[in-house]
Amino acid sequence: MMTYLLEIACNSAASALAAQQGGADRVELFENLEQGGTTPSYGTLAVARDRLSIPLFVLIRPRPGDFVYDTLERDIMLRDIETCRRLGCDGVVIGALNSAGDIDLPLCRELVAAAGPLGITFHRAFDAARDLPAALEDVVSLGCQRILSSGGAASASEGSAMLAQLVRQAGARIQIMAGAGLNAQNIARVAKHSGCRQLHASAKAVRSSSMRFQNPALIGLQNDWTQTDAERVAALRQALEIGVQLP
Image (cartoon, rainbow, N blue to C red; front, side):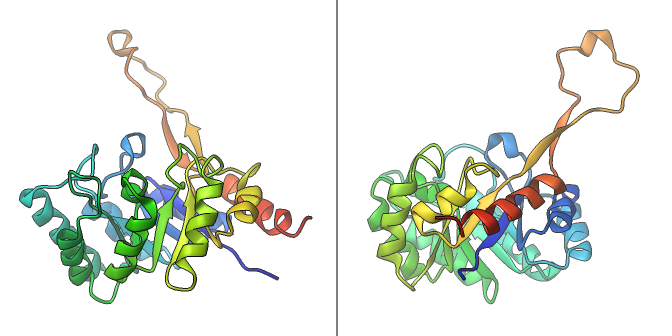
């Protein structure tokens, strides 16, 4: 029977602990989910590392927006990777493009070298590349272990055909991990149609504020937030294990 790895995208230490409770195999930790994710704070990293027993990968992304970075942002990413190594994280999640839409090989080589023994995932900057098959070959040349991708589509479900093409091209050289828009209703279908053996989802739910007092002048501000939900993680795990065995 095929085995599948479930990675949960976590926007806080609390989310990471919920992912572990729900049965995740690995956590990708970041902040600012609504803006595509940025590198989490030192405190978030340190607490998550202390309390997690499953592998912890950390997003290395200094800001929202595109994936073309200047020298200041390069220096920030190198420092963040250094922090991840010092705290004993298991891996980092990197990615950078040049203005032409190709993988920024010089910068990415620096990031990979800085990571040293840590595992490396290339994040969804990959999906913003102009030529995904060519980008795959570049990422393989960097020595990354996996690529997180939706197949260049808005969701992994919509990009399943391209993901399947990438899986065939990758062979045993690198893992293609499907991510974007996965839930308990579609995760098994995406796994089967794409051939991806690693799946990435957020399993998030809205957490309501416990504030009893609300300043009427600030009603337009958001007091609620999203957080990984252990029950949704467990539902993803169950759906994946059961669904892929069905004809």
